[in-house]
Length: 187
Image (tube, rainbow, N blue to C red; front, side, top):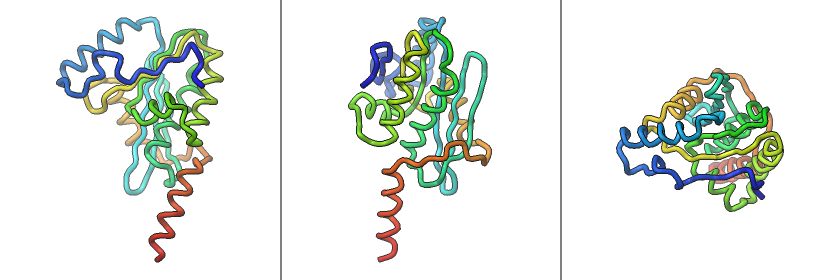
C-alpha cells in the first residue's frame, strides 16, 4: 500500500508523451522541473548487457552518485527496482519534497497494482519507510532517450558502472526464471 504522501505519475504530465519530439519533451520537462523547484530531484536507471547488470542512482541537487553491478540473474525490471531502492535508501534523509525520475514504467505500474513480486514488495517496504522521512515523494516516469538530462546522466552512469557488487540479494522470481531457463537448456 502506497502512503498518502507518495504519488506515482506515469502519464500525468505533458512531457510524458513519447510521441512528442525530443525538443518538445525536453521543454515540457523543463517546465515540470521549474514547477517543482523546491524539491530534491533523484534519477535512477539500470542496464543489462550480455555480460553485466548494472544500476545507478543520482541525487541531482548535490550530484551524489551510486552505481555498481548486480548479480547477472537480475532481470532488467528487478534491476530498475533496485536502482530506485538505492536512491530512496541513500538520498531521502530530510523532511522535504522529493521527485524520483525513472524510465521504468513496468516498476511504477507494479507499485500501482501492488504487485506480489518480491522486488516490488521490497520496494514498497522502502517507500513506506522513507515516506515518514519526507514531506512528499513523487515517483515520476520519464521517457528514455528523449533528451531529459537527468535520465541521460543516470543512463550513462548505469552503463559505465564499475564492476563492484552493490546489492547482495536476488529476487526470488529472477532465480526461478534462471532455473527454468537452465532446465530447458539441459533437455
